[in-house]
Structure formats: structure tokens, C-alpha cells
Length: 258
Ligand code: FES
Image 1 (cartoon, rainbow, N blue to C red):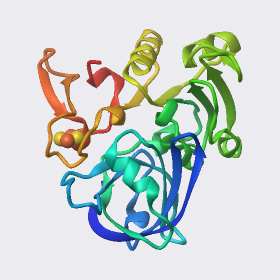
Image 2 (cartoon, rainbow, N blue to C red):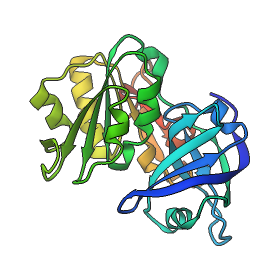
Image 3 (spheres, helix red, strand yellow):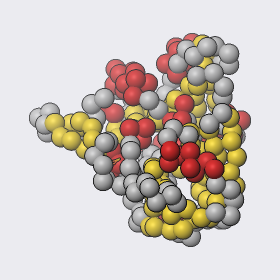
Image 4 (cartoon, protein in one colour):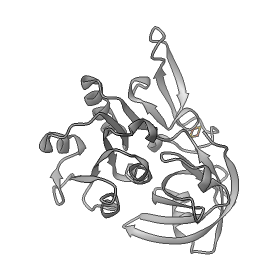
């Protein structure tokens, strides 16, 4: 799945989309040409006190300009540091990392792209690349972001926990309320949401790809914080451990235990 590289990437733009959620475009050399939707980059701190990088998923790819967009939430010292940098500053970046979503398999199909919170951004490039009937189902706590951009590539259905926008509840409530149907599902978000989607897909025999990227810490195989249980589909339910950052972050729902 491509060759990862280490590059010094200049920040082209950085803006806060809403409280604590930032959108940053990076100028790459080769990374943008190799990158696939659902893959991620690992960004190194410029402040020498943090040795391990932070993985951030790819939100959009501009191959012509060789740029990559990251939309991330400030969730600790590393991401807080990145959010402070202005255009012109360069960051050390390794990528593209991980396997990504199988967009070609979705050709001609009705596909649900289901995202929760900061799991929503990687679905944008995915939506852009799928040649099929894309239905984006996005779950937010209260305020929405990126929904206008998703509307260019498919139908958009929103759920908010407080009901201030769209369906009150979560992404599963949207499917029930709107009576939506899919041939394939791709999803990214918190584990409880992915669990519900996995159960829904498996009951109906719908192929379902889950990105477990929210559980990653270093992104480069060094910290082992991302180990998950996986079962080989064809063996006699042998249980194996997989590292999400090395073997994923995208897995077929039937391959992993959540
Ligand atoms: Fe550190 Fe996978 S995130 S080993």
C-alpha cells in the first residue's frame, strides 16, 4: 500500500473550524501522490520533549498541488502544539501510513460512510473517490463541521446528540428514521459506534469496513497502545493480536473483536 516517506512538510494553511477542531493543509513532496483515503500521517513535534509522533488521518488529498489536508481535534500536548503553528512553518511527517478504505470495491454500490466526531474527516476523501451512490451519515455531539463539503459527493444525513441539527441521537438512529439501505459500509469513529455498526452490518450480511484509528497513539508501531483482538476469518476462531497502526487502521468488521 504505497511507500511511506519522511518529509519536511510546510504548513500551507491552518484554520479552526470550530472549538478545538482544526483544518491544516500541508505541502508534501511525494506523500500526496501515494496517499489513499483512510490512511494517516504521523506528525513529529518540533518541541524536542515529545519523541513519539502523533497520527492524524488524511481528510483530503490534492494530487495536483501535492498537498494533504488534515482535520484534527486538539486532544493533548502534541495536537495543541500543531494547532499553534502558522503557515510557513515545516513539520516532520511520516506517511502515508496504514491501509486505507477499499474505495474501488465500492464502485457502483450504495455505500454508507458513517462517521462519529473526529472520525468524520477521513470519510471526506473517501466520499470524493467512490464512484457509487454515497450516503454520508455523520454523528456529532452538537455542532456540525465539514457537512457542506460532503454534500458535493453524496447525500448527507446528520445526527446530533442534543437534536439541534438533524436526527436526535446517533448514526444508527438516522438509518432507522430515514429507512436507509446500503450494499456496503465504511465507518470511522468511537468504539461504541463502531460496535453498533458492526452488529448491524453482520446481521444483514453487509460488507463493512471499520477504521479503528481513534485507538492509535504513536502510529508507527512503537507504543503497542493500539493492539486489538482479531480473528482470522478462515481459521478455527484463532485469536490473534493486531496492531491497528500496522495492520489497519481499516479492518473488515468480521476480522476484529471490538
Ligand atoms: Fe503505537 Fe500502534 S499506535 S504501536
